[in-house]
Length: 74
Image 1 (cartoon, rainbow, N blue to C red):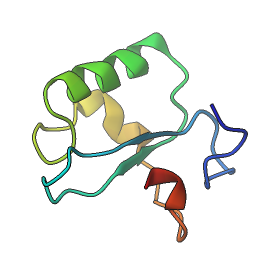
Image 2 (image 1 turned 60 degrees about the vertical axis):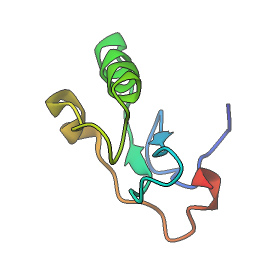
Image 3 (image 1 turned 45 degrees about the horizontal axis):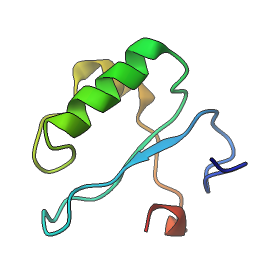
Image 4 (image 1 turned 180 degrees about the vertical axis):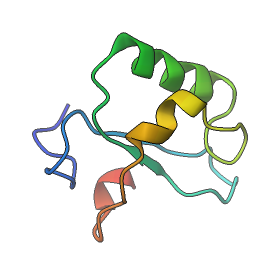
């Protein structure tokens, strides 16, 4: 839990990191306020997450730009 995850303009930011060696980049999601959105994230991660599984359509509206300094995702 953090007060601000390098993207303070959005509430409830989640960074979904790919598995090591996949070559995909972390995916930043904002406004993750509902159980449905959390469920989509959990399902996506269970299927392999970024670089291994397609992102659920229910998350596309939550995509936000990665901050210039995304050290929080490393």
